[in-house]
Image 1: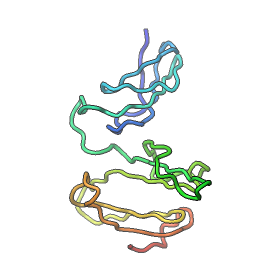
Image 2 (image 1 turned 90 degrees about the vertical axis):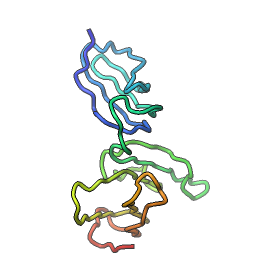
Image 3 (image 1 turned 90 degrees about the horizontal axis):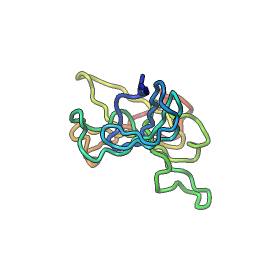
Length: 172
């Protein structure tokens, strides 16, 4: 009898694109369909003890309650096009970011990377945000309506900095 023992995440984006790992026993090894919160999760691999799938966008409301915004950060990658010597206008890859830091890999060299998400301060006070980047980067925040992109304000803009150089920056 198949039994699920764990799922790699208990939350995710309503827009889909999150890879889940489902572990268990006697999972058959030939699973072809998985459903998560009423939506199909595209099976990427299936074994006797593990299934990997990618979640689909939620077409209706969450079945277990109402959620505001995204859970975590969304990472969008726009690849570099050597023929036109420019960055593509279409998204090459869009995934759930598991870290605030992007790996220094060939996939992200000569590309545009955009991280988006929601931050809700747990208490009133002063907060610091730091960033380092290759070429240029900008940091925006909205204090009024996080669902309205027009409500955002640019807080920081900086040009090239060394890897993890958070000390040498100024407000934009």
